[in-house]
Image 1: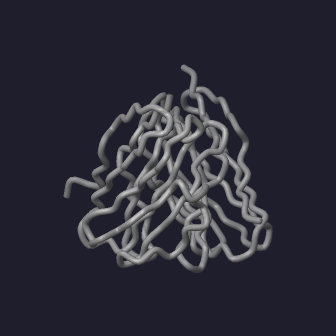
Image 2 (image 1 turned 135 degrees about the horizontal axis):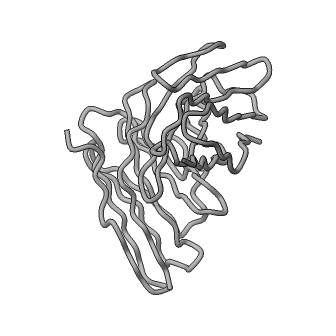
Image 3 (image 1 turned 180 degrees about the vertical axis):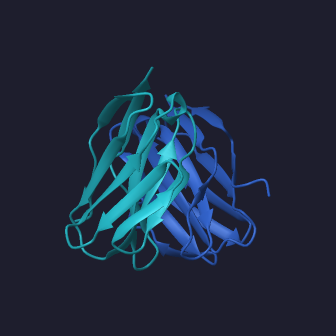
Length: 109
Length: 112
């Protein structure tokens, strides 16, 4: 089957660094994306890894290892506004995007 | 661009009634996706279109659900008859090929 697993919840304090992991058990994913969703809002795109390695976008970085079926999102210098749910999503060869189980991040002052 | 536009924002209906959700994608986007989000099941892909043609509807729960895209600027998701378990937030998203998805604000459906 197709599944992308994430921890259900992560907590951290302002200014800290947090890593949200994503593991998947399927073949055929050729890229991994990350989306952010605030309560009551729509998912918004954060980052995409087409190849293995690290992609950096400001305070956010994303990593992919296709041989390990594993990726993560790294958030640095956490701010209160980063409190949200974060989803990894795998792209299949026919452009079908499957979302992970989601991780709720709570940032405390 | 106004982004992906969904209507209505909220829908409350009684079990057995027909529900129609609407979506206007961003102009020029080749792909349109319908997702359903619940606490229990997360974000589920229901169906997606490429150039108005349905590509994969394997996520559509059952025959009560149907989706159409009569032209590049409009899509509908219909539930007939609706059931309480259909209560969820339904998102429409569009994208160019090999590009991130742009989501609409969603329709919150409550079936009583």
